[in-house]
Amino acid sequence: MNKKKLHIHLIGIGGSGMSGLASILLDLGYRISGSDIMPSKITKRLTDKGATIFKGHSRDNIKGVNLVVVSSAIPESNPEIEGAIKENIKIIKRAEMLAKIMEHKYGIAVAGTHGKTTTTSMISLLLEKSGFDPTVIIGGEVNDIQGNAKLGFGRCVVAEADESDGSFLKLNPYRDSRY
Image 1 (cartoon, rainbow, N blue to C red):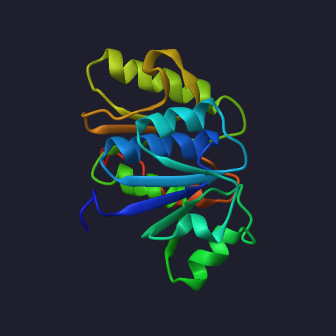
Image 2: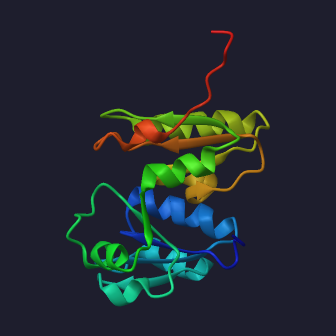
């Protein structure tokens, strides 16, 4: 399907993991909408990039949507999830969308209890300074990329992974067959 016509809706778009994903999808040319409980600096930045963001959750927010992306923080009782199920709109987890972005790239996913943002930032900076121009999706704001996401044109994707619900197992980070 044509990127310009594919409408992706992210529930909880203002969250640390979802906002970076939304930013990359916007940069890739997809039509993006999302919802969050409260507007924030992050949702304003996404709106400025072209996303349509709704305050609060409602079935009306998913009209005309082709795909819904949810984070592990969103309960299944969310009205947008219920509406998507009723309308037969495909629903995928954040990790599945991240896996799609990592397809055909050298993926580096950072998981763990503490230090994910710092470690992901350090790896992305090392790759950037080494000339690899990685795509980066981080849970926190990073000065070097002026936010929490950057679309790179190199072959690497560095992302902070959410291991809380096991969905990060959908990611397929690069493994060198020599080791």
